[in-house]
Structures are given as structure tokens and as C-alpha cells.
Image: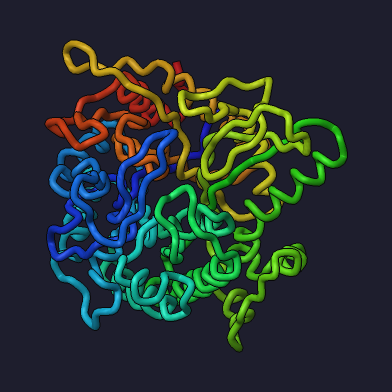
Length: 478
């Protein structure tokens, strides 16, 4: 077995968790800049102004803003074919409403893309990755307002035209389906309802959330159409946080509950962006939850015209679904579930399931029949910097090896998988907890949960291993 020729091996980051330089180069504050640090048990606070005595980890993050040449050289050394990154919207339009973009911000990404191309690395750019100008939250309550559609499209127009010869692959919104969950109100939609003070316990309004999600669907469709007009060679995809669920038992009630969770958690957004229309089960969900989607004339046609070229997704784990309230629960990426007795779990309780990735790839390809990319996958763990600045992360190698094997098996099954970018290829700040100690990378960044450290970069054992995987196109996994 082998991966296809030209397979896009690489790694993934996001500006808000990795870039830093939050108030440099003319950048304005983003929604992520208003989040304090937290832990696995202590939620991150959301503050409308910066408060003394609180630490805001996204302000510095991994300081890619000042280390980009060094970091891209390390990616080149590993042999990356692609680097998934995001552009910080508030670096291009600090408030989101300006008539003209911030030239200094545009130049920064010019330099990043030029550096990537020197190393033979293709950029894969997420246009909006869990951040938007915080001014838009204050003025419009984020994506709850349709005003953001045109502001986003203006932003897209600027970056599409500026980088039309430097970027081929684009993703419109990161994990857009987080908007189907209360957690995604602020995280993905920039909605900050009165009374919300922390990230995990937001004052939720499903009507606002699902209306905001509709606005993002319209913005994405417009961006796809615009991008193809500016450069017909652009490949523009969606990005879904795929949360694979299994029924805990063969109890039909468990099976039906699992089916519903898969529909609303995963397929609701994918169907709109790939098929160009809301799925049949959406109307019943709206009815049950008193949601009335306000559509403008032409919206349905626009969704049909602005479907994506490929489907990308994050995959970390699987969950079990049960109607039995007495079973042990477990956490995970965006949602939790019931503990699966057949699986081990990470330090953060995320269940490790490589076979679930093969299953997911087959389910997705059967449903959509478009090229797929796994653009986030990895193991968050406590890494220890040992003598000689070494990190022996055999546990990460084991995790990635087994998932790569299952991707290979899915390709043998007939799935059109075109790329793989493990998450946090260089250590970065966790989105959910704001911790630096939850590490995913092949490269260790010398910084702690409070930004203390030299920010020096050190190669982990997984760095050398992944370099060998890429060089062999996935055939050497030892």
C-alpha cells in the first residue's frame, strides 16, 4: 500500500493560537485576544476590555510573528509539501469596517508566503479561524448580523487579489459546525450575549447562533464564487470538526440518538457547503428548537452556486452515544460522550481511535464524492524537555503512525484523500483551555502557560520520524 503521488504532507496551525504580535504591525484586537488562559477544569474568561491581573495567552502565543523564517525553515527540513495556516482578519482590517486594508499586515503575509515557496511548501490558508475583529462583536454581535457577510467578502476580495499567485488552496471557515453548539457562539461566530463571562458557560441563544451560521454559509458561498472569478485555479474548501459517534449499545434508542448527533453535529454544515442546500432534517430541528432562519431572496440559489471544491476536516477522537444517564462520561473536541470501553484516552480524556478515522473517511466519501483532506489530527500531551533539549515523544509517534496506517487503508478502500496536516506541528496555545502545556507539535516551543520562557525551538523525536514518513510518502512508519 502507498499514498498517491503528490500527496500533500504537512502540518497545521492557526494565527490566533500561534502567531502572536497581537498589537503589532497595525493589527487590531480579535475575539481570541479577549480570552484569558484557563485549564482543563477552569474555563477561560471572556472580557470586553483587558483586565489587570489576567493573562491573555493568544497575545503572544508561539510568537510566529517574529520567528516565521526559523519555523518555516524547520517545516522545510521536515519536507512539508503544504502548510495549513490562517490569516488574522484583524491584521488586514483592524476593526473589520475600514475602507482600505492595513498594508503592513498584507506585507507580513507576503513575506510568509514567499518564505514558504522558497522551501517548496504550498500554503493552505484558512480565511477565518476562530477569530474575527472584536470591534465587529461589539458593534454587530458578530455573525448574528448579516452586516458581516459583505465585510467578510471585502476581506476575501483583498486577500484573493493580493495573493492570487501565491496561494492556491483556501478554507473559508474553520470548523464551521462549531456554530451548531453553544460553545461555538463566541468561538466561531463572535456572538457575545449579555451575561456571558466565560468560554464554557455562554448565555446561549440558538436563534442567533443558527442565524449567524446561515450568514457564514452565505459568506462562504460568495467567497467561493469570488475566488473562482479571481483565479479559476483556486481550490476552495470547507472545514468541519468531524465528531464521529458510535451507538454505545445496540439499543435502538442509542442508535437513533447517535444518528441525530451525527446529522446535526457533522452533516448539517457539510451538506450546505458541499451539496448546496440544507439537509432534509434541518427543518425538523428548527421546528423543535423554535429557530426561524431569515433568508433573503436569492440565498438558496447562492448556496447552490457557491459549493466548495473539496472537503477538509479535523479528526482527533470518537465518542459513544447512549440514552443511559448512569454511564461514565468523557470529554473531547467540542463535545463529549460516553466512555468507550475498547479505547484508550489521552491526558485530556480524548479517546484514541485510529480505526474511527478510516470509518469517517469512508462515510464522508460515500456521502460527498469530493476530494478529502485531514487538516487536523494529533495528540495533545504533556511533553518534557530533557537534558540536551530533547523531547522523547514516542506516544505521539505511536498515535500518528496508527492514524496514518488507517488513512492508507481508506485510500485502498477507494477514498480520494489528497492531504494530511497534523495539528499544531509547532507547539501552540490550546483553543479550548488557553494552555501551552497541551502540546501537539513536532517542534517544542520553550514557553509555559503564562508566556514565560525563551521561545527557542527544539526538535522532538517525532520531528525526525515525520521527516522520514514524508520522504517515503508514507511507506516508512517505523
